[in-house]
Image 1 (cartoon, rainbow, N blue to C red):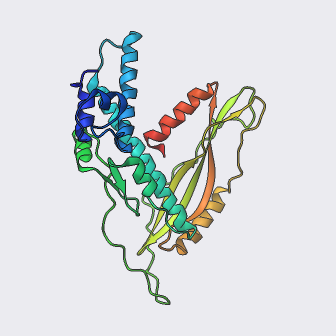
Image 2 (image 1 turned 60 degrees about the vertical axis):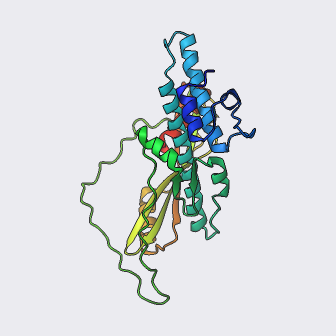
Image 3 (image 1 turned 90 degrees about the vertical axis):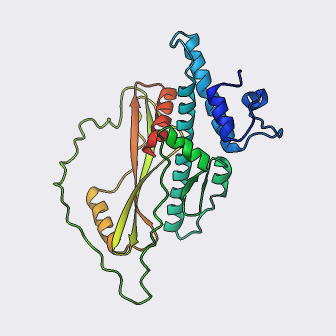
Length: 289
């Protein structure tokens, strides 16, 4: 593997390592130690997309190896994985606050992404300056840090609560959704089901109440044999959810509280389980999460 290759030189420059066969082939730095976990993850992704490109040449799908494309694909995938891990940590913060538990520490997450980026106790993501500059050069803007604007002071015990503001809806109400294409509960062929849970929580900030809608998913897909019912859970009615949210707005506090959790089920018909699993992983990494 020539040491002047664009992708490897960029990676080793960012990691402040000297190009060498050992660094490129084994991911080992000049001190004889394996690269830090963040750089090692990017190293693995660069190898992945390099091998994919070389394989495409071998099977006749491409005529030459595009080093710039392989490098950008590796960096883009690394950025998506970091954002996904940070999002998962932020979700754990919301769940802990909603249940009155102690906020989890970001130490394990920081160990996984060090030194590319770091996350503080509030879930704010900060990229390594050299990595942030490289993301901007590629047109991949890092996720902005949350605004440092301080929150309004909480009301004193026994004092008046801030006045809540209700804004009139300015858009016309949407038509009721059409459920003609809802998959049948029982089918004559095998299907794959992917179960997600949508959680709705409320948080009060001064005179405003903010609604959060987040998705979490269970690991893996469920194979539903022919003539078996889909693994559906009983969700509350739309009217019950609206009534719960209306009451929750009036009782909202500065600690986010989950008011509603409901199942959303994706089904795959006439599709191999491996293909469905790969599709859901790409969908989640692309930003659905």
